[in-house]
Image 1 (cartoon, rainbow, N blue to C red):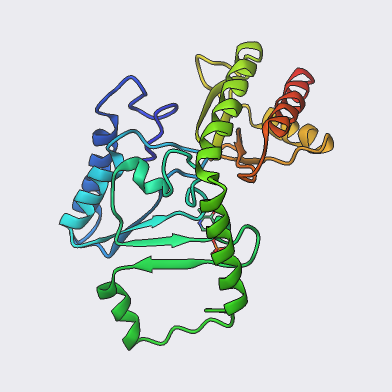
Image 2 (image 1 turned 90 degrees about the vertical axis):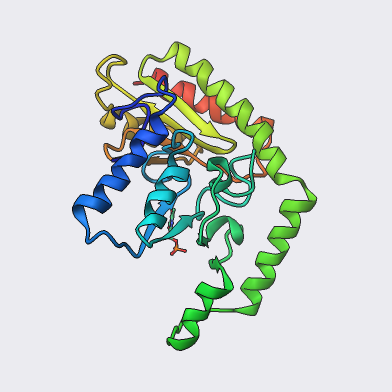
Length: 262
Ligand SMILES: Cc1ncc(COP(=O)(O)O)c(C=O)c1O
């Protein structure tokens, strides 16, 4: 069950929502598998799924259920990692868990083709008895670019910047929400932001066509954003982490116009 406190069964007002959604993982293991599982993959904040931010305690409990069934917990940090959430370097830290395996890409290379897997020596050792081949694996040029990116993230305090600039973006979007009733929810952590569009705030009927229109109108004015969620009704806003307050102002102006034109 997707742990979505906007659209799901247990909402933001339920302090136990994380625990309750995680019980679904336990139920699935018990009733839908042999009782032993190999592993559990989860993005720490769902990206293409529509910027779904899990309720507190969700991954902690889900990991516990998976580990009790012999499984490993794998965090996909391809979108949420490298300081984007602002408060933490890794998305999984926002859920207070330590995964067994972490997959990472995108932000690691700032556009350069690079991805990595980090795990414990014990788990890594299993590959020593297997063949793993990758044409560009271990490419030293890509690795040098990745190292440079890490140094810049550190030196220029990019994580803190993502927190501050992300807050101004979220505040601005919440301002737009007051004027455009199609905006059902604005959510995000740092510069991982989602704007969910609905035809009606009570029924939460997804405004998928309108979302596509806003997406296209914004693009026509020079603002490229993403779109996601099962119904394609969520604007996914994950800009480069070096954006400044003028960029945020521009984004908000363009979105305001695009919403006004609906
Ligand atoms: C969350 C997430 N995980 C994994 C991938 C795929 O990563 P890669 O292209 O490095 O395999 C993507 C997107 O391409 C993604 O958004």
